[in-house]
Image (cartoon, rainbow over all chains, first blue to last red; front, side, top):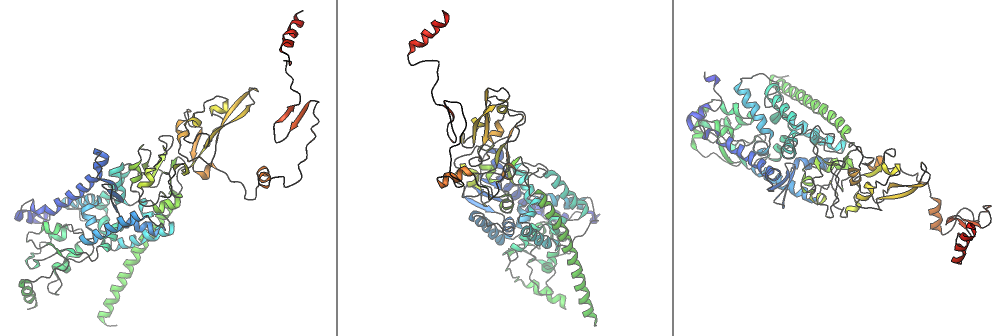
Length: 299
Length: 284
């Protein structure tokens, strides 16, 4: 029976349903709130943010632009207006500070679609699927920029589902539903966590942007880990966990430094032992239990 | 070869093969995308870019598809292309037959553009060149039939500059004048108000991309009459009055009034009484 339990079941039993979902709920709130700010103009006539995720103007003063799109534009040979460059710099600095892929897990609309696919896979116990290589996204990122400079246009934006879906939500869906269905089914039946964790060049771009971000999750109480594997099961990028969680014998820091970590906080939610929490990148474990455990392992 | 060395070799081999696979995948997708980009590069003729838009190729390098121009358009003229439209995904355009550009003086769409895809140096909307109106259907245009529809001419924001009515002889009736709408590329902004207003079920006048609507004279062509005016006289041979061999009392003025009767012949003499008397003589 326990094999059929969903990841996080133990945490729900220990901490209660709310605390076992607090980061998820917070994340969904932020995603929907940002979307709501964009939608309040066209739907209610209250113009707080104009534009869409690609580039926007907040309260008619603050320009924000997506640095990935601006990079594509630069590779395509265009010299953008200063407004766009300022906007892109502001956004890049923001994501450097809070974690590059915070974009993916806290803002991007595709995240909700692919999370649903991942959740359904777990519910329906779908184990099969095409395992893509996680580095593929960097190749696609390189391709999108090289193709931009060859063709002299922002080629990736012809199909970029992230910007297309966001724009669709705000400016009219058209054929966007097909794209959403395609991504949903791709992640559900073809490749587990296929899009966001393996292919999306935008995610790759933000991984690089937040390579040295100061905000990271740490396995601060890693000695309490009972190997329930829930964090691996829930994490969209589980390869980032072991160096921090299981790195004590090698004297590795408990900070998750893998740049693919999206700072989504789901590992914090699902851990019944409260091993993880948000820390700074420079967090140093000072507790003696760590060293104790280390010596224990060594002996 | 020692065992660990062999292992390193295997790792390297696996890594290289894996990378090669990913690179090939990216390459294939890239090639597909480039092909797709080529196909979508030419805008459909009905889709018109906002004022100040860079040339299509440059526009597609510059536009970040944010829709700020769409938001600031007070007449809801502009739309962003959704997937499935014929226009490149997410880029702004309008269809003149549905909603034309109202040519706002302050050009809010250009002001809103953060990227420079709409050129900020456009400050006078009359200098915008979104396309060029062309009277494409001379068979159905009512003015070509000899009617005074004139709607395209009347709605033109640059009336008499971008569209003028040129009188022509109506050969069908032999005695009327046709007023032919003529578009002048020197002034037409391509706003599309003429196309929008055309009364026919399918517009006879349409805004087209300038490359489709306009021909070009060969570079070495010179218009003789213009050259003559510039030079202040004929450049080829001295002007000589032509002997027209006309009946007495007639004169022909080339480059001027044309055929002229030397003596004004009217049924009315110098003395008004003569005219009255003439009538009396006839009745007697």
